[in-house]
Length: 267
Ligand SMILES: C[S@@+](CC[C@H](N)C(=O)[O-])C[C@H]1O[C@@H](n2cnc3c(N)ncnc32)[C@H](O)[C@@H]1O
Image (cartoon, rainbow, N blue to C red):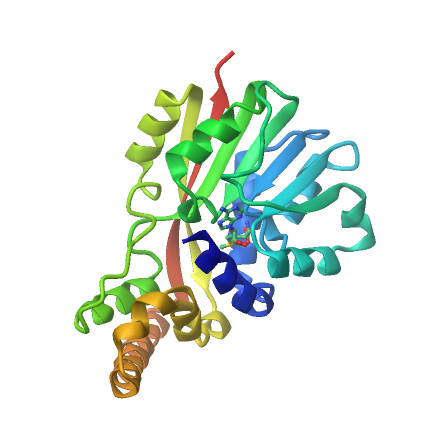
């Protein structure tokens, strides 16, 4: 599974670095989480750096953010897009979050996962990364709510008609009840949750099909070229109808429900 994820993000790195709605989620989520000035932060699944750079702005010059990611291509983008100012308090490392060695009770003030927890084994990741926090340190994540965003739901529903079951990785982590009970059972207190609706602009929606095909390529192998092109036509027709309906309702683009969660490591 992990080599497939790394490969998918290898192909997606360029497009991802221009994804307006992911950048907006990262900025909104990090502001909501409320990092402190001077904090030392680990950003797990940092990608092209949207969340790392947002965190770096919050912690200021006295703090620092380490972005960790599995995908070399995503990290390369992050490193090359960092401004001279951002380079001063950020660094990136290429590593698998499940395999990197971690020491307990370290001096980390916060660990964040912005739209990355659903690629990990979530309970194990929360437990392992929770242990590197100082007592009272914060762990926070942002994840899509189940069956969000609309283009994903559409893709999943239509794929079903072709005998393909697309997993919804947000099924658990995108629900506030799951988040609260899981964080509490893993030794966190002061658990807070919040739902933000982030608009996916039209320029991101036009790429949605390609993103799905990249991410779910292994599952689509059973389709012959005619089936794939029928599937694509149905998808584009229904997505266009959804965009037009949203436009008539005065919305710009389609809204995606994103759950934000934070908790503090008990002392
Ligand atoms: C949707 S991107 C999120 C990027 C960034 N946090 C943001 O806010 O835009 C998810 C990232 O998680 C990374 N990822 C997935 N599985 C991982 C793993 N096992 N270890 C480290 N990173 C992983 C992917 O390579 C990808 O860059």
